[in-house]
Length: 192
Image (cartoon, rainbow, N blue to C red; front, side):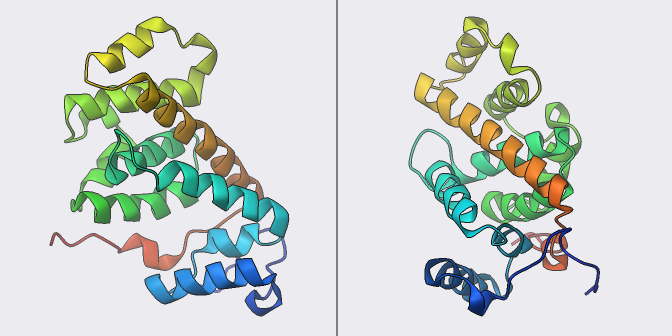
């Protein structure tokens, strides 16, 4: 473990937080064995943290045409293109666990087009990366490319919304200097 700061901004004491945020953080800590730094950093502004986590949950925990692993692939690919160390490392760990694949997160972060994923997933990531990098150029052709792989327009919304939400997350992580927890680096590295 390192003693470098996890943020450029003050980190509140968990026990001093409003009850709803404190309960959420302690629940995450109990489940994972540590508190992901994103919770502590964003708790600097409790109202914004609540809104952030509510939208995160609405996008990442819902049912739909994307698996939980595919949702994490979108986060890893777009976070890499946005230069967000925190999200690549943290969501890379989650992707490795959800996909039950110790290699996939590194492949998706470095070059999704060469990753050992399906053509359908490559089409999904191409769309997500276009949302992250050049959303003004999205056209009906991009939707047609998704449909050719069995995605619905609602799936396209989910892909785009995850890419857009994590663009916000990536920028906040970079702004605050959010450091990934050391625990994330080794999670899911051993195949099960």
